Length: 174
Image (cartoon, rainbow, N blue to C red; front, top):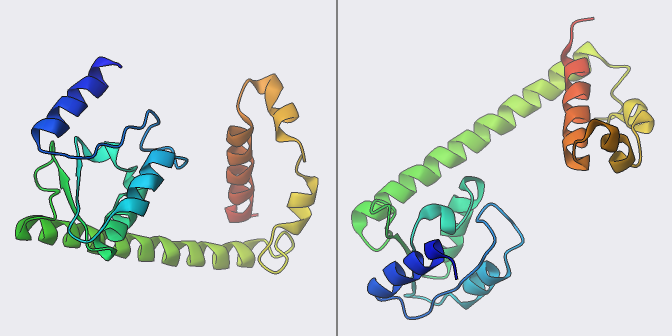
């Protein structure tokens, strides 16, 4: 057991945690069996305690996780971030404000994305067929790993670069 995990366990036990879920993968990883087991076992009145927020979920998933805990009647508490504590009225208020800000940001992103699609369709109608990049996608490599190997980048990184390049082409003034 590494020192960091030992420290976390010591702090959680001192906080009075009765059941501790241990997972070696990062909160940024979406494949987390112990985390899923935790979510499946939450009951009304349970308090989910974490050492730090990043142990619970990545920022992009944090509010959804908090919502899941709340929906089943659970509460949440972070030992290192005392403001993230839905067992208190002040903590509930802060998390509600954060949830509102996150929802507002999602709406803005959705709006900007929609406007970007409209602009792209107007600028390059020949490249867009019913919302899909059919002509360009037909020319993309089927096996990204073979194409990525000479550049010493991952298959996912190559896909990301290709998508960004296509978006750049669509948004250019010809």
